[in-house]
Image (cartoon, rainbow, N blue to C red; front, side, top):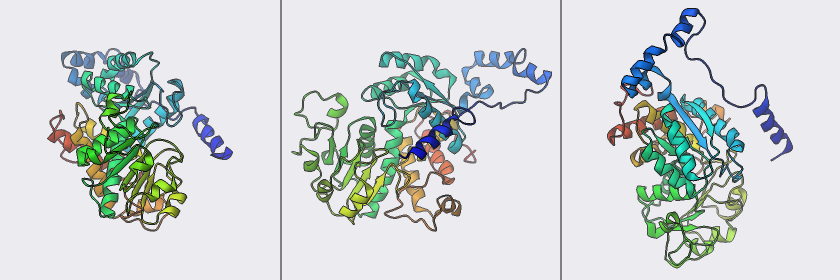
Length: 414
């Protein structure tokens, strides 16, 4: 990171007004009559209607288009546990993306909680305010329990984007890369470097889509996770593999896919060379991937490479998922975001990458052409078609799977 970029980032957040989001009025409040409707005495009428039927909150308030982005600051980006207040710029950024890409109103909430249970209690008590909750930057393994309990306690979608948003976008890109390389998910040998929230969710979703657990090797700081190791939590045990590999290099022998959700420069050229012909490498550590793209491409000329960075092809970017997933869930008033909705989002992203790229997208990225292939396995974030394609697929899946409380809209997007 250059000094100039650091200054530009700080200036962007400070000027002309500190922060990245604000509140704006959705109704006029310019006359005495309008103020009487907005507040006392007119506000009493929707209060009475909501007291009669809580569902009326969706008619008379902004609840149905309001998502809370909530964190305890225990796993901020790649920076670690810096506390809830330090997470605020990230949470505001997430709120900005919700509004920019899907028209979802969003507010950030940073919770100072002494335990996972205290965090759960705090969020559960305020959940009725919102139409959905996006959990963010919460460390593993606490994040698994927090999300699961809140899903059970809340009657609105609760979604930990570090888990499922990453998994959805990764799965979409990976399925397309496998197709291009002439391989299948069912037969692919997959090595996942990292065993945190994103890694666990990615592997779970890939299994839902057809990957075989016997072909999955999850590697943490100690090495390959296997049943003979001591001190494994229940989430790591789920992916224990007793196939004999004990190190990353062992696991990479003949591997078809490498998924990195760990740290910078942990994948060596030696390990990359050990992979099967036509390998797929998702080096998603940010800002520095598990292997430098230039080094990876110099080592193997038959691979498909994806990273978390915007300055290389095939960016695995959560903004392709979460705004549109929540948009679809909100539009049919889903009570949760289930596996069917996640898979629908995967398929929508996959198919959109195969369609002709609009001129507007090419102009936005200052390129002449963009076609489905080794350097284009996922849509670009500024592709306006994402709203209709992904949100529509998620909304339809919510209806089909029985978690929607409204029918699929006659015209979509709304």
